[in-house]
Image (cartoon, rainbow, N blue to C red; front, side, top):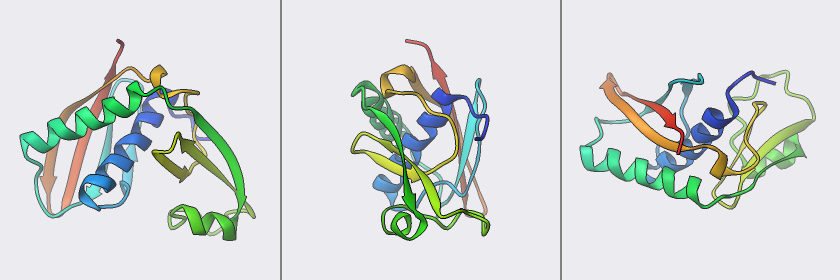
Length: 145
């Protein structure tokens, strides 16, 4: 398993689903997850507006506040391809793929550690956003509530 901070890593999943739902941009293609601060990079055509940044933060925090269960389960690779994006899996991926499901909001193939419930995450805060050459970078942190 990847040694990501479970709270931050679960927040990343929620941010990815929120970005895809709001902008149909897919999940981040690159992420750096740490306990104090993290960042996600998206293929995106422009910079976000202040209003959009606020809307993303509000939606992520709404999902966190719903106290959704975070569960893991395994699927055969062929079944997994029907329900999650498997394009980031290494070519050496085994027959069984681990799926992380956050309530009815998100599910993704993932090997990292996560919280048991979204309420454990704390408050999500976007610390900065930048845009360069078709890449939107969102930096975020978590605040204890």
